[in-house]
Length: 350
Length: 150
Ligand SMILES: [Zn+2]
Image (cartoon, rainbow over all chains, first blue to last red; front, side, top):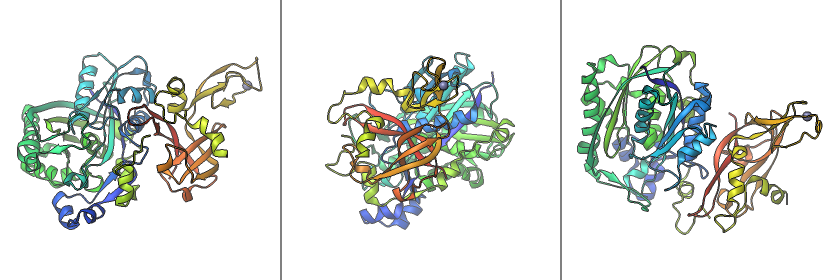
């Protein structure tokens, strides 16, 4: 049974902070950071935005394109490392906000930056087994970097939603393949405000090992090569890792550039691969093949082979990733600190 | 003064208590999340907040639920500089009276812009935002706000 994307929706908050603005606070060389991380600026959620508001906006945008009856949605899964509640689901809020309630199943996922693609796999399986007609998978985050830490230059906000079904698909998901191990490269304990990471340990044994293994695995399994693809999207914790991964696998910068958003908006965590894929779908035409590979610390990668159909051009998504990226307003570090609730003694929630 | 009048319709104000207003918040979720009001089948007039009886047709009218499109224009607005508790870190912000395309006037915060970008007559669309959180341990309440259409 053919399973694919019936509609997708993206969202990136309007506010940005430049690397220079952060670097000056910590006495660091902005140029060195920008060239080292390949990140010029990152998105910042407004004071009244969180993972739930982003997830709802993405889901509504996806529904606008899919034009399906929300009552036909049988499952909603939201992947994030910044769910607003420790207990109480983001997915039930999304279900209510798109009027998919009450006859459906829903749950929240977490797997660092790959929770959104894990959600996609779940609904793919449910659609393929005819358990549901449509399922919604969302990756969304408003991630936090410890002030002064390298992550502060990249941890950003955004998301994308995918409505998966079997009819009228604008892209067929040909296959998926995952690679998972127990790797402590990045973590946050319950109640801890900021995540910790294993610094240099995050590259070779973590990101590259999993991304490369998942990509190679799915290519071998499908007897395909990099040249068979028009586009490739790799998880993008910074602007450099995905380009290195592409090079190691034999993909060109041209194949990767459309879906590489981190230099302009930072790392949207669970939103990153789904948003990169959305940026590609905004431009892709019938017959184009896409390789998408996520990465989540802890650690694992989910790879997908996607083939675009004629439907995509017929029903082009009007709320493009580009339109969200281009609409921006810069914040100073002090206003950014307030928005993110980083000012000591001030509780935004009272 | 007018801010005080508007406040109860914007959100259920909970002050320091965490649980107060939980049931009424829950009951109003369809209105707050999706602008669900009512329509009179007889004269086609639409109501938000929802009415149970059409004031024109009375018992000849038949009321059914109606989902507003969430688009309209700014009918009037005010800029809040002395914000109520829970909103003080958002000041200054614009609070608008939005004329929905279907007719009713709705009071809502106008976000993602500076107050001086707000003008009477400008087109707006509904967004889903955090309205209020009952402290670090209370519930987070969400609902409609509006933003300017580019
Ligand atoms: Zn009437």
